[in-house]
Image (cartoon, rainbow, N blue to C red; front, top):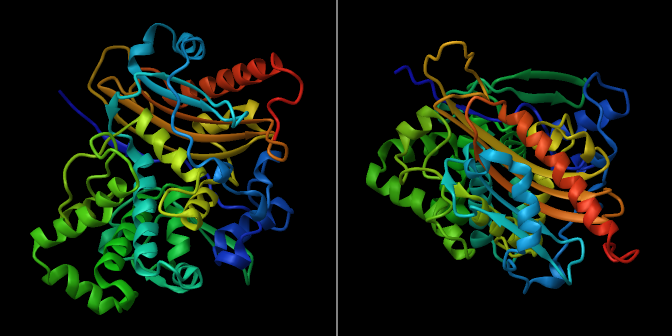
Length: 422
């Protein structure tokens, strides 16, 4: 059997609000803003992607006591009906927060576990923000400065990734797209953006490197490149694995998440895996991903400041893909991460390829939807994992996004006028 397994990150879908350059120094954000104004040749944004930084915020700060409700049988039945005769190849959770006083929850195979691919970068982001909070618990200005001013230089941990990052020069207003190369420099905030926006595996491994360094060196961070090289070369492998565990596994437990249901067990690049042995397989479930997102909306993922920054990093401000590409979401603010993994073997009359594996065809989506963006008549979260063989899973997730949006619209049209607003 010929098995081809490729970790497929999403196509470019940069995030963070378009007015965020002054605050963060993320150059890609400025490029996207200027593109939307017609000053740079690039993709323009749909209405739902035009919120300012101040409008992108946590929606459940006053309802931190909310836990996941028990699944609503009627709501769940409607969601399962959308999955058709291949429902048992999905795990899905939908949390309707449109009326936050009466949240409604649907779940089917919520504990179905598989490798969630690039969705695991949410774990890497959580780990970095947890390390920042532990190092400077009462100093948000210092945390902000570290994110904005720490310059990180790509090294062997970034080897290799074919996905491109967006390199924008605000001075010349020029944009390049290419994979990460050794010597590329960006702020820690930019590496986070490259990790979550274009889902660069190279960027993810650089972020994970920095999270481990911050966990180890504490307030001595950041340290010089030669000290970084010595640290990873001279530290025994067992100690590096222990540090990996303290950096990426323990923070999930501290945030009330079940590491038997959600874990990023290794780096995202082959060289990163060689340099630091992780803790095993990576996986997730729809229910545990929902728990993570709920905590973020409540300001309980690390802390309120960290939750807010992670949500802003997930705000889509370029071409939408997969679940988020549904035309029904054009007016909605969408906070999104996806990832996939496919495997192929020869099969007569079947053309196997990305998103259409016949051995495995994992597709995973996490989406917060606020629709329409400026009014939030609807506010809901979808966590969706699937392994439907031989079908274009990107298109399948897009179709489900449309169906779920229409279902939520219908559900709230049935309620008294204004009951879904806040």
